[in-house]
Image (cartoon, rainbow, N blue to C red; front, side, top):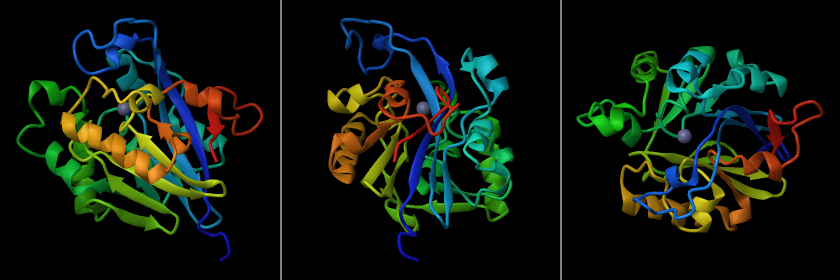
Length: 263
Ligand SMILES: [Zn+2]
């Protein structure tokens, strides 16, 4: 079908927290200003006449309370406000397995979850339980995915692959072992949902890696990959930047502060 591989893209904001800029850049004293720099939490959706693809699934109110995050709403409620029923979503791309990206999996009972081999291997492997890593995931989320694999509900990818026409994933790594970014074809050209390859616009624009790092050289490499996939930084959507809510219009009237239409 003509235009069947052209997607509309939305960011759904579901949680937030106060933070300071010094927390968001790698290395001690790397940010001399240390000013207030809050962090938002998002899931994303790409919608075409033929496909609805959700990118990440957020975290639950219970996890938010335990980790001291301000939960605004369940990500599935934000998706519902866009007319997307989590209960019937066919594909959910999981950019990486950190707790803020793969909670609420049970609310997507019909989804196939798209994960990179390297990410799944890491979180079921030798170093997942070590101090600096174990706090970044909820063991229940990883366990859910292990079980989903035995039910045939994981689609493993390794590197770069097409998921549906118009949507590709690309392994970037760096922030986590097998972090993947998503390139989407839209009416205005391609767009890269970078997730935590760049938490804020500032990370990639200023070439300053985020503080939580699995592999520093690969994090720089992820910046390069995202730049080349997007063609222009104006076509990059960072994973946690409140500026996303300012730069794009509300997805529809009444959804101000909740969801924006990126493309
Ligand atoms: Zn994150």
